[in-house]
Image (cartoon, rainbow over all chains, first blue to last red; front, side):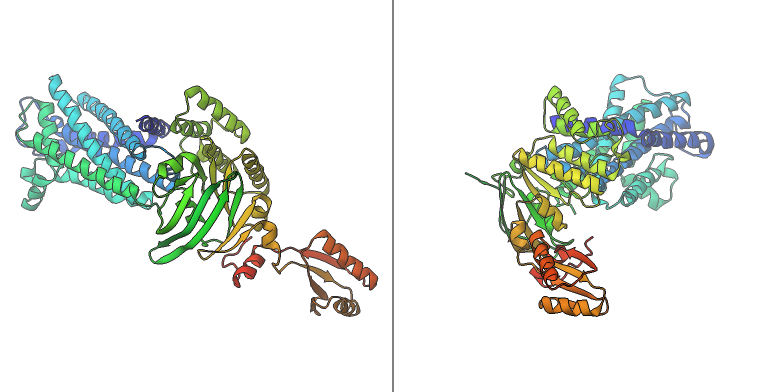
Length: 252
Length: 313
């Protein structure tokens, strides 16, 4: 446990040393937010909205999803840097908890992502976003975001361990950037072509977005909350087991 | 009574069908320096990685600091320190932060950690650069920081994988001094190198590794004895002198074009004195004399019958 705290402290120092990466993970979602609200929003059909709601209200859940996705990609690169710089090999020859190396990355990344998400929500409110005032719903939003961050970060850690170079993590970056577009993040899947609509209905980002959106806007979330949690837990577990197996492998 | 710091028998390892270590036996006494000598690709790094618990092995037995490497890796890890060929420092942390990270991971109490970090920074001449990011350090500084990080936990057995490869002469001598200081403090050193002079300079015992097999083991003296390749090269002003000298040393090889004669010799002072005395007695004048001591190439050629595959210095 002490080792994990030490590793977390190392991770926090890295973040503070490298503010560029953090600005990117906040800057890109904010840019998308401005772009969609200011440019595309008026032309997009997102179905019925609660009274007084605008496109920004629909959009924020999807932008939060993108924020978590971008946040996890920096983790994939950080883990990969540790591997290629050889510092992980040093940790491996020390009598420390092996899990602490990866746990430090995951916890650090999750905290960083939640802070980014908070800033993104702040910007959205400046743009007219009017979320719920119910503290229980806010807690649920934070919980769901943290769970999603955990899931994507464990996957990112595995990808970072697997990739031979930092460039090798780019397929993962592509997936977390493109999948939100094929979900209910930006437009309602009802307007998509049948094949894409089928895909959107069955990919994890749709229930997560729907769940987040319902919680934020005080609208019913039906079963999307349960499905979202199930996806996140499943992905987190898969990512964790995958990362653990890769980490136990003999290094090259 | 002396005990083994490292005891290895029949160690085998292959990567995808290629045998890298083909049953090696080693015994390193506590408080001594042991050097594994060999060219690139001989299996030196693989041996270090296995003994430092980084990778597994396919057969044989290995004990380090009294613990079985395969069964009690954590006990081994608690006793060892490793400095590899490529520095394993955290580039996004400063020199001092890198050392503090190690102190924290060794669970040193805060105050003790601070003292230890300051002491190591001073010892490795890094105090001035302690607040700078490790990414800005020169090669020699990185290597020093790397070794300092290894020493934070006071390891009893230290693995140094080619610690001076790529270092300038000054840093190299500094590294040698540090290693001598560690051994004086009772630490066991397992050193790999491709430089014979380094092994000669530091090691109590040397093992020569070639293609995954140990081809020789002993003290530097034992190894160098009986290794041909050392010779004295004499150059003469004219053919007459060369002829006279060639008659005086019948085991020599002559080169008529260059007017030189190669006389086998260990290059030692007494051998040189005897050689010069003999030339004096025969009244042969020599233009130029150069001494060629056996190097790794000679050792390899003598022990394995083939030259080192990689260019060595």
